[in-house]
Image (cartoon, rainbow, N blue to C red; front, side, top):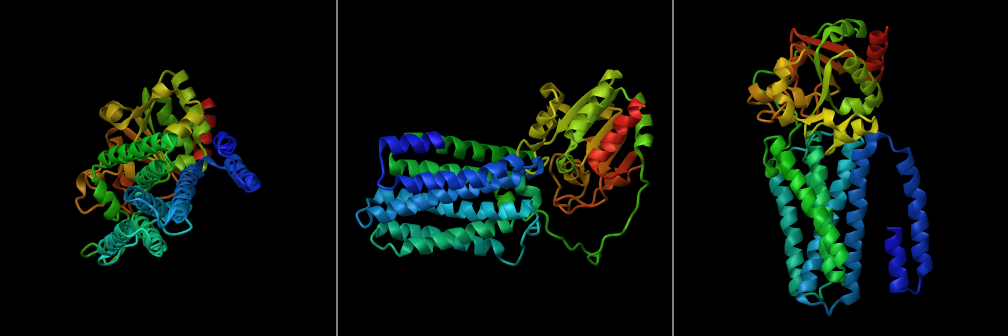
Length: 419
């Protein structure tokens, strides 16, 4: 960005370069500390805010271009500007809400009410209609701020209606919107680099979102309008869950099983990121490998809170990349595995996805952790995942629940095995 700004100032020049330089300084003062102090767990929400600020910048530049050229704006330019402004403004509010949900500033559950999809689509249709009206009559500049308000409103309503379980896919979708809005602005500014970069960003984000939908066995529209994660009142349940308990095992109990295990598959989840346990987990894997065990990591496409979250986390701990296997490549191996060690995962290993037709997870491909001879789950509590569905695997006779902070528990396992 610094090179781009400097090149623009040198090539074009400006009457107020001091304002641009001031903006660079302010941006650096705000951005550098955030980046340097950013914990790994906050990368998803930081990514969401990047989308928010980027799309807002594009939308504001588009608005400025319109007001500079109005009323002498040709039809093509107005149409492109209207499109990129709608995409930019809705991406801004949508990304801001995604940030708030990921940061737990607001509830991660979807906002569900009667007719919500009609309301959301109605707001989008109004924004698009105002865009068409602006194209037909570019001199009516008053239409732009009204169109922007409805676009902002649609972004808010869209992401408020999506549950935390779908946030990884939402981030990919918002990434796509931000890229497409930038590409559209490139046509207006006759900036080929912006067109190419925006198109790459937009298309890759869209393809990633489609792949993640496929990994969850859900349609693109179902993610946008399905509301996964809402509290579902089941007949005869009276809205209450039956309280159940399970035996709590210790690191020493688990170490007895791991000592004789010949094959171990590790399943990382968001709890691994929260506890920052990736380095301790890598130490545990090294000890098991030194003892002759085959150790691999099973990566579910939507594990964590953003695409590739687990891969990035484990790469930070220098876990060999060839040990990270995608779900399709490793799922059949669980039935011949001695131990499946789950660190902070929940929805991606929940058997309800196979058997419970009224579950919001039903139909989603999961890791076949329950097929392993022994299942060890490191988790703080018996709480449900983002989808709000109880996990029957917690109560299975071959499951050992190791309650506590993931880093503390894995470190204890390492120490016990060394001893």
